[in-house]
Image (tube, rainbow over all chains, first blue to last red; front, top):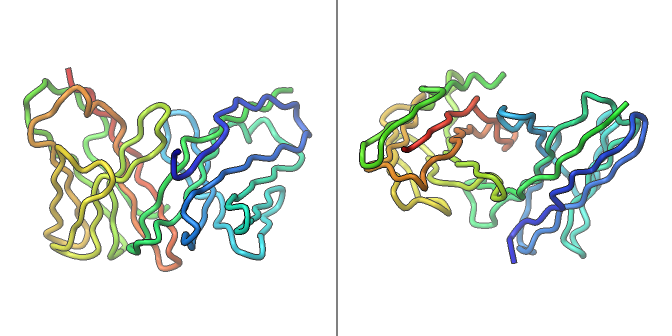
Length: 111
Length: 111
């Protein structure tokens, strides 16, 4: 079993739709969680850190469920520009802020 | 913009040759990381550094070495490149909020 798992997709949604991604992790001692966005042939860009209380940034909402060991990302009112691959990352409990990444979920938003 | 540059951005080399990739940052961050990204695997940590001359191995360190003789530069060396090291290499820094930001990447092809 991989340490961090994501549904690879693709998720094909129309503009304006709400879409949600989940990411499961295996290490219950993990303390930090992140969502990154990656466009084709570009570097990952931090979308948001995920806090225990959940957090929201405009159309994006991230949640952490420690009991079930998953994090989620909700995108409301999808835009064409949201088309990208979304990577989740989980902090390694061993320190030094090392991250373990999922393989990513591809989102395609169509008109 | 986290002030991270990587060089070269693209490189084609032959099996058995040594290759050095450079990561340069301008903001004096203590922690730096090297990842590789391959289809289906997401980003995997190769080596990381927690200060000048302080480095350690990540998940996929075999065949790679690193050096950090000054804060701003973190070098990744493939001592004798193999075709399995064809990949996209990303460098990252850890900022003051314990969030990682990535450089633009180096596409390496080993023929």
